[in-house]
Image (cartoon, rainbow, N blue to C red; front, side):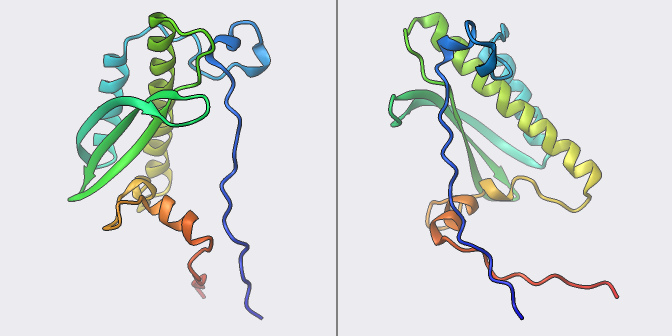
Length: 163
């Protein structure tokens, strides 16, 4: 009998407002009190992507069309000649100030840096893994993850037995 996996569904998680993290410890996300600059976290991300074999890293600041709109960065890179992208979307801001915008963007980059550091550790304990594959962009302009989710199905993969 063959197993057929359920369709893949994107889990929507409501992001708390950046401003609310200070008053409510139950919604604090790591990095809510970062004080280092964007440049610091950008350099960290460039270094970590380099450890994962990527180069040509660029950061583009912009706004994502969510409700409410949220600031963020599109981080692009190359991995063995294949382009990739990671979206770093900051938490929404209830009462926008320049300082809050800077801090929420720094928090987003801090979280991406932490995620990439985890991927570096993954390669150490899972030799042969390529953690950046989900972020690689195909000919259709979609990342591997976007294409997989849009297809609403997992490719039929079979486990290979060692014995």
